[in-house]
Length: 324
Image 1 (cartoon, helix red, strand yellow):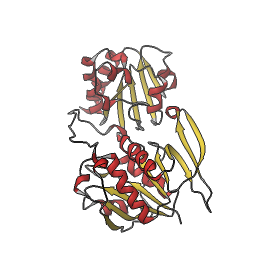
Image 2 (image 1 turned 180 degrees about the horizontal axis):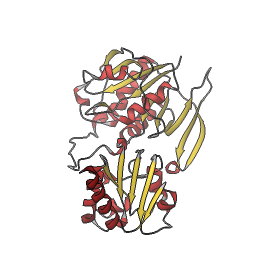
Image 3 (image 1 turned 90 degrees about the horizontal axis):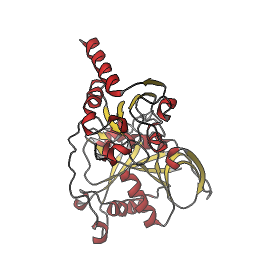
Image 4 (image 1 turned 30 degrees about the horizontal axis):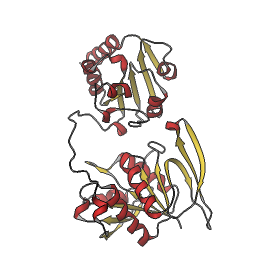
């Protein structure tokens, strides 16, 4: 029986969207899915995890873990893995998930695979067979991985998050980790809101993107207005954050956030491979650009060749007219 543990990341609603995807992924590779919760455990979380088929919640609990510290989280997870005998430990392919899994693999002296899209457990001592994204998602790599437990992160949007066929009532096992001062040297001391509003970029159903063609920081007002009208959020290309026009957490791309919305409206974005790596999972892409030969235009499902500062206001006006 393959026992897979998933590191749980949460938001205000409970299980974070990419963790829900990781839980769905885990159900596909093992008979038993366990959850790893580090730090405070909300009272409603075990029931929510039960909707994903989790049979047990391993709560790594220590007041010093209220703040995120990757090495300390990995220390607690390593202790839980040693006691429970997991065959695999999985996390969502977020910045936090990748960092904690890298620390965990180092502690356990096993390999770590990032950006995994499929996994087949090894039997009778055979290695795991994995497929993962490399080169920003442009290439899929098949590989085998030895070592126990198998440590990996799931590529964002590699699977669609779905509840389990049957709801479980997971037992909660509390674990007090043995932490050293060295584990707590690097911690997150505070988290400040950007004040940008909007939906979570990775989970947004609609994203309105802006690139170099916006022209400057002052040109994003109409894109934000369009995103709000569509019930979505703003995303930007790397050049926008490099120029300081918008904050980095809004960046879509290989070094930003990977998105999979129902609709991506790319305004003034050329569509370099680094940006395409972050938006190629969108179900429908509409490009607005003055360059008919821009990669984003040629790859998009629909395109409007024109000045975004004329097109976007016209779209906003039409939406408001129809809603009136």
